[in-house]
Structures are given as structure tokens and as C-alpha cells.
Image 1 (spheres, rainbow, N blue to C red):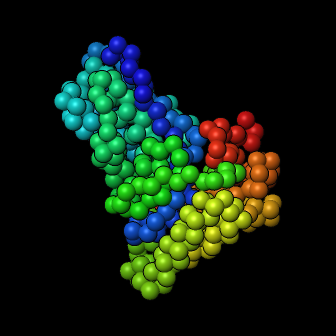
Image 2 (cartoon, rainbow, N blue to C red):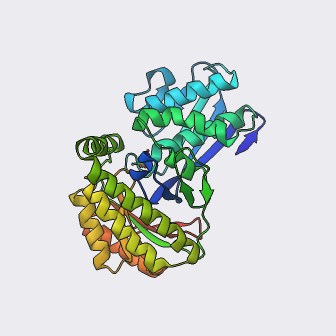
Length: 321
Ligand code: MEV
């Protein structure tokens, strides 16, 4: 966070990947998430008159923000209210590299950057508790009843072990993971995906509970494997998790195709990441060159975008960038 004589302040955040445990985390099971170095930056500046927003989706006065930005609007209003400041004389600009609605946590990342920038602008310290309770306002609009894993991993600089309502544990892998990420190019509707799992649960609780138990077990094994640096084992667990996500009905043809293509390219494991039903998948490579090759093959196969990175660095590489 930066403060410049109270006339301009910057707040930043980054995207996230769920390594294992999405959906199960909504039912109180553990999940592992990590920062994904696609960044968002929010700049708050002093101006005169109505609060103006400038973003890729909408530019104009805050009162006319479109429906898909209502979460951000509510979060902004509540943050200003919490700070005891009026909804005026501000210009807020959001510059995000995170593709929208792809399971990469764009909504939470934008809200985090904005809350950070507003607190910085008014020279106020921001605690994690304050940040999470304000960002949760926006997340509730976006996802209905979010577990909170997106905002927690996006406010963290390292992988985290997350269980709803429990203390978040930072996880420091002993060996870096080399990860390729590919985008199906289709919007992932997390809210619908979460609702579908809920309906399945209501219709067939034993079957869904079995999947959730398996994912719980795999997340625990992955945590141990991460701490031991057993990359091979993590790959197998990713594959196992994907099978359960397929059973939960949140994967789809596009995601399955990319997962199969990654495995054909020698990935140690591959699965969807985030809510599914469109959006992104990830694959584990043996090293950086291998992650690059997988990302390249996924792009050639039909991914609208693909990236590769290593968890021990803040650098992200795009295949054709
Ligand atoms: C979305 O990134 C992850 C889900 O598990 C939903 C949630 O945890 O709120 C699908």
C-alpha cells in the first residue's frame, strides 16, 4: 500500500488458484489455495463531486454501476461508511489483469485492492479481520455463500491451508511446484456450480458425502506431500481430486479435454481450478520447461489463454506474450 499526501493511494492484490479442495471447502472440508501472479491494482484519487469509477467493465458515476458490479459498489459504500467518509470527491480506477469469471478469484481480488486503496487514501491501518469482513460483502453478491477461500488466498503471499471458520495456515512447500494454467475461454459460473453441488447433495447425500470425504483425505495427503516436497504424489492427488469433481458434476467437456491433453503432455496431474463449469484448469509439470511445454500444448489444443509459473517466484509467463 502507498499513500501520497492523501491525494492518491494505491491498493493491490493478486489472483488465486485452488490446488485441491474446491467445493468440498464449502462443506467445511480443507482446501489448499495459492497466489497466482495475475495482478490487480486500484488507484484512489481526490476529485470534486460524485464518486467516479474507471474500470474495464464500466466507467462513470458509482450510482449507475452495472448489475455485475453491485458487489463492488456495496463493498465500496460499506468501506467508506466504516471509515466515516462520504461517498463523494473520489475517483477510483481499477486496472486488472485477471480475466473475469474464470475461477481465478477476480471479484475478491478487485475488492481487496479497492479496500486497501481506500484505507490507504484515508491513512488508516487495515487489519486482516477488517479486510475480510468488507471484502466478504462483495463476495456474497458474487457467489451467494462463499467459503472465503478466494479472499484469504488473495491476501496471502504463500500457499494456504484453509478450513472455513478456522485459523488459516500458511504452507511453505519444500520444493517449488511448476504449474501450467489454461483458460477454457468460457465464463465459469461459480454460483451455479455451488448450487448444483447443493442440489446433488440434497438428492443423494451419501454419494456426495463420499466424494467430499475423499477430497478431504486427498487435501490432507497433499498437505503432507507439499511439506515433504513429494511432487509425484501431489500430481496423483490432483488427478484423484479431478475424478471427484467430475462426480460432483462441476467439470465439463472443455475442462475434461484440457485435463486429458495436459496428461498426454506428461503432466504429473491435472484438474479444474475454482468453481468449474467453464473457467480454468491447472496441470503440474516436472520442471519449468515442462510446465511451459504443457501450457503451449494446451493453447494449441484450444485454450483461450495459458500461463506457466513456479511457486517460488512472483513471475508469470504467458504462452504467446
Ligand atoms: C471458488 O473459487 C471456490 C468454491 O469452492 C466456492 C467457495 O469456496 O466459496 C467453488
